[in-house]
Every structure is written in structure tokens, then in C-alpha cells.
Length: 225
Length: 225
DNA sequence: TCAAAAGTGTTGGAGTTACACCCATGA
DNA sequence: TCATGGGTGTAACTCCAACACTTTTGA
Image (cartoon, rainbow over all chains, first blue to last red; front, side, top):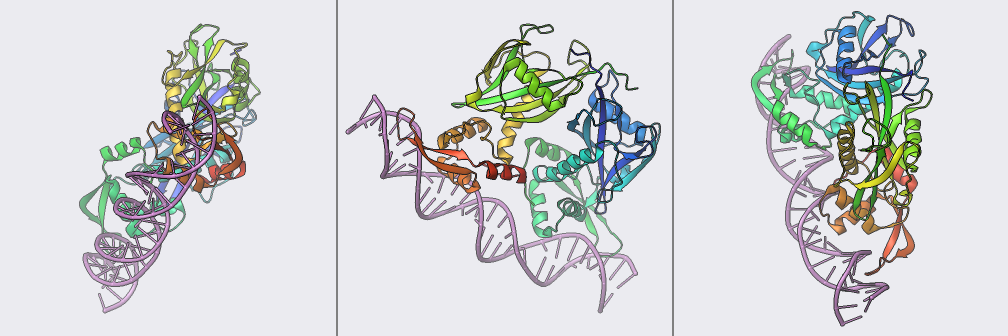
């Protein structure tokens, strides 16, 4: 009892968003099994590090990315999910802002790349299933907590937030009603600055008010768009 | 790499409900560490069983209970959470109906007992924290999915459901409005039978319509009481 | 001056809350 | 007949959805 040969890994599904496209961060595996195939970044947990630390370290080693939000997703443990033996994986869910999209393969990965979630390559292990759970979570999250802070740039025009929701929900939303609802949450600060995107009327920039944003998140919120 | 000395356990927080009281199932530990102390049931995962199977087996071995609902809760992995070394635990969340309250300590437990969640003994390991997460989940669940099927008897008077919600929410709810809302969900079938609880007008019995209940659960629902 | 994106209010309807009295039974 | 819990309807209000034109800029 307790003399197991089970090993433990962490994996991280990291989402990024820019210009109406949601992307996932994948690596091309450097070693067997599934050498040369695409996979979610992750790896074995060291004996004295916490789970979250393990994820952060693996992400750093494999992709060089700096994450702005990380939460535990689900633990996958089917006995045959890994050809190397019994390996249980604790999957995490991460979000990054576009300005930290800069990535670079390193130690354990041959290549790192952002993939549009609607155009993914075949994945290793049971990573397709993990990604499905993560995608569901992402879509689910926006209906019960404000999201955006972790995915958008620090300063952004309102239309970026609107486009993010449109993309995640997969349908059009009414601009006026959406703005009213978001404004009423009282988590945005309107800045003096404007931004011009080539053509059209320049947009005011907003930023999230950290304090009120996290307060709202903690309190929990249910809002339908 | 991958030559770990990390071991894996499962733990289960099992809730029961009867007569306005929410209880948790605890065991008194038979062996060190924390011998003679109360703890959440659980134990080591065998090498060829799935996580869920492991939980079910441990619950059977330690408490003899038959569970009516079981879902994964969260994985706890702080390096120092167990004095025996690095042990990561995958916690599950379970619900049982009152008529299966019959429990019996066996192999690994010296004693099994239901505890009112408002009157708990000191717990072993980080089980207090696990229980907190589970309690939060329990309370959270009732606002975004119908619950009750897994906690109430197969046939029950409407007042039982009402009392369950009152208890979980920790506040009074309007009887008429509550009934209207639940009825409008269309998951209850009214039976011909009545039940008399000693004094007062006898109540009609209801049962959940399995099909519509699970359909609603899958679809996801947000309803405020 | 035209094209492109940003910004802005009002109204009708649906759904929710608030609220109090009668009913059926056992003692 | 009284005490106990069960069962029911309506009116006011709040919140949400639907809907289209004006403003500001760059080309």
C-alpha cells in the first residue's frame, strides 16, 4: 500500500486572444513518445515543488511565456492515457495577454506555436480531451465572472472587449446593451486617451480597475449577455 | 526525470441531507499518522484503477456507503500536506440519499460517523481545507444547476426541497415563488400519493423526472432563488 | 464628402418580488 | 375546535431585449 509506480505530471492549456481570434499554446515534442507531434506544454512534477510552481516552471522551460492567470482545471488519470505507464496529469488553465505573446522554444520543446482553436493539429496523449474541457471552461467562465482583464491588453478600446465576447459566445451581441451591462458592473475606468485604428472614429481607451475587478470576481457574479 | 517519490491518494467529501441538516461523512483513522483522529475517507490509488474507481473502492472499504453522485473536486498538492512524505490527493465530491445513510466502519477505519457541517471535529491533514472547498462547491451548485435529486429521497414532499434550499442558502425563501420557479423548470412529477407527518395537512409527494432532470443539468441552467 | 468604426436612449414586455389567507388533517 | 403544516393568486416593479441614427476621424 502506498508503494505506487504512479507518476505525476502537470499540463497547461494556455489561451491567448487577439483581434477576434482565440489561440492555444502548443509545443512540438522533442522526445518520445509522440516525438515531433504537437502537445500541450507540461511535464513531471519535482518532489519539492507545489503543483502551481511545477506548471509555471514547465511553461517557462518549454515556451518562455509569462502567464497572467492560472487556475487548476481537472486531473486526468485513466490508467492507459500515457504509453510510458501509469501517469496522472493535473491540468491547468491559463490566460495570457497579447503583449506577452512572444514565445521561444527551449529545453524540452522543439518548437512552440500559437494555434487558432478552430484549426488545431492532431494532439498527443489525451490532450484533445484536456483541451475540450479547457475550452468549455473558458466559454463557461464568461457567464459567471468578468473576464477580459487576463486576456486583453492593459488599455483597450471597448470594441476589443465586445469582440472578445462575440468570439467566445460565437454570436453577435447588441453593442448598446453590452456596454450598458459592462459599465454597470463598475469595473472599468475610462481613460483620457484615444486610439485610432486606421479608419473610423477613434475609440476611448479603458482599463480594468484591479481592485473592483478582483472584488467582483471573488464575490461571484452571474450575468447573461 | 519522472523518477518521482510522489504518491497519490483520493479523498471523498460526502454530503448527506435530512430534516434540515447537512452532514459530512467522516472516519476515525485506524493507523498512523493521525491515528484515532477524524478524517475524510480516502486512500492510495491502485496502479490499475481509474481515479473514480479508487474513490468508490475506498468509500466501500472504509464506510460501506453507496454513493448517488460523485464528481471530481480539486487536487491538493502542497509539498508538506502529509507527514509521510510527498503525497498528492485528488479530492472528490459526493452526495448520498438519506435512505442509504446506513454506514459501517470496516477495514481501514476504526469508526464512521455523520457530522453536522456546523459542528465538526478537528480534522487530520489539510482536510479542513478540502472540506471548505467542498462546502463552497455544494452551495455554489444550487445556483447554477438543479440539485436535490441526489440528496433527497426518491419521493418527497415539496417542503423537503424547500427546506433543503433554505438550509443551503442559509436564509428564508418565499414558499409561493419558490414553488412557481421549481415547477416552471418542469423536472418534477407530482404523484398521487400523500404523506402525513404527524400533524398538519398531508403533503403531496413528488419525484424528479430523471430524463428531464439530467437533460436540464447538461444544458446548464442559472437560476436565482 | 465618403467610408468606417464609435458612441448613445427609449420603450414594451417578461419575469421577479412581495404579500396573506384558506385547506386538510390529527389530536 | 384547535394547532400544524400544506397549498394557492395577483399587482407593482424591475430588468432586459429590441431597435437606428449621429459623431468623429482618415483617406
